[in-house]
Image (cartoon, rainbow, N blue to C red; front, side, top):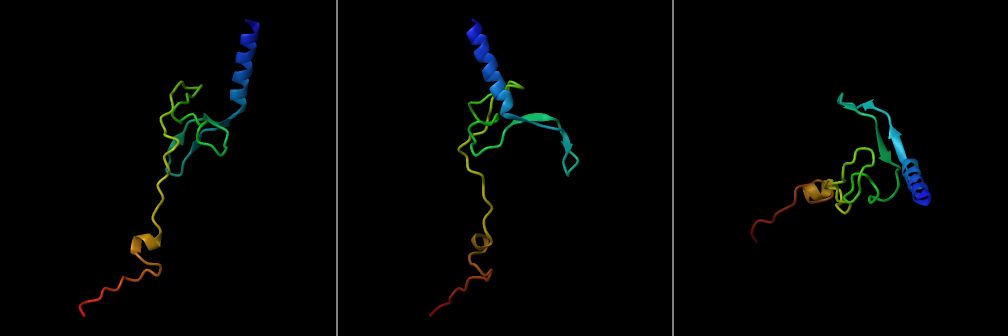
Length: 95
């Protein structure tokens, strides 16, 4: 019994050490963001509270974001306009 309590405390302290506290702040658009905890920054998407399969220990909310979705990238100027120099493509008219 004592061993299981000790293990639970060690796991809980490990979770707390991996978190960062973020103070409340006001965004440029005037929106206030409440103080909160977030996972420590790293190179993986799998251990974030908002990722599917994870649960936020502070709020009890289950994660909903799919970690395998790639962010949408904006098309480059060339992709939007069809060529590198922004010129209109030439169309040949009849032979």
